[in-house]
Length: 390
Image (cartoon, rainbow, N blue to C red; front, side, top):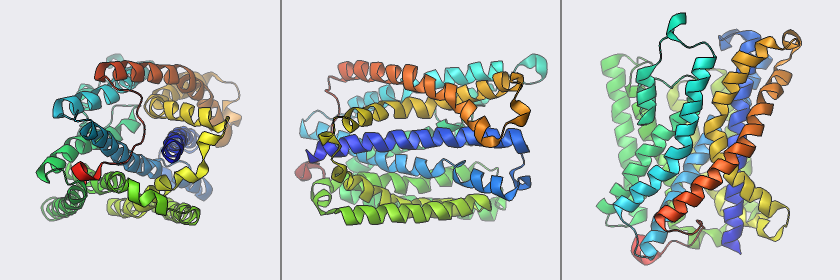
């Protein structure tokens, strides 16, 4: 019961986080249409809205914790069945990421073309960014236009690669791997920051900036992996009171994150905020069984549906938002009278319809195909086998 409750709660969390990211991007486009591209020139209330609801970074940190948790759970299950291999692991990661990711990239190309990006208008196809996005290296050359959410997949792809290497190097002692991985990540990130500062004068456009940020955020991902390692022992200890305390701490860090965005603080402050949120997200996940969603006939299907919505919502929404903003919104007669809130709602309507219908159907189809390919049943949360992994 407890594991099923946790699984449903995680699906619910993922869906809510994805919807909040979509809201952030829609609101950003609406504010830009009302006030222009220079956020420093916005009225203070618009800057505050943009720094709070218009920022989706906070929710991505939660995704990283969930990702580390789920990936190690998957490895632990395969270990328990004596079915783990690096080739199977690689196929599992590729088949999970790429199908919907490629659909999203295709929609972004269509969005780029529909919104006036063509050579005849002085805007040649961004081939370098397109190719970099295909191999999850877009953080080093720039995001493909209209496909900004895919930046986090650069991080995910790196973490998927590093985690099994750490496990093997630590002889499958997962907790040791998380500690060593965190220490190495911090040392490497600080070293890159030192090189960046001393040799390149802190140039904000240098490729070392995304490099050290990606490595530093691996620590957040490792918190999720560590949670998976101690899952059987830690979950019974997380009381409703501790869960509420984690929610309160997340609200506090969220407020700090708003201030960071409002004043355009330095990159390291975002990383520190991410570190502060990671343990609270872990406690929230561990205490999620207290929701007892499996006992509700209404919440159980809703949570499962939200889980199916999360990934296509995250990767498909922004190209749709861009198409609506740059091809449809200019022809609406009420555009001039629109407030940013109404503008946001108009943008969200078609995006929400698309991701909640075609996106969910696509996700379920891909997951069914993937399960047949890997010979798996639908994934469930199971205790980590301590003798072979911990």
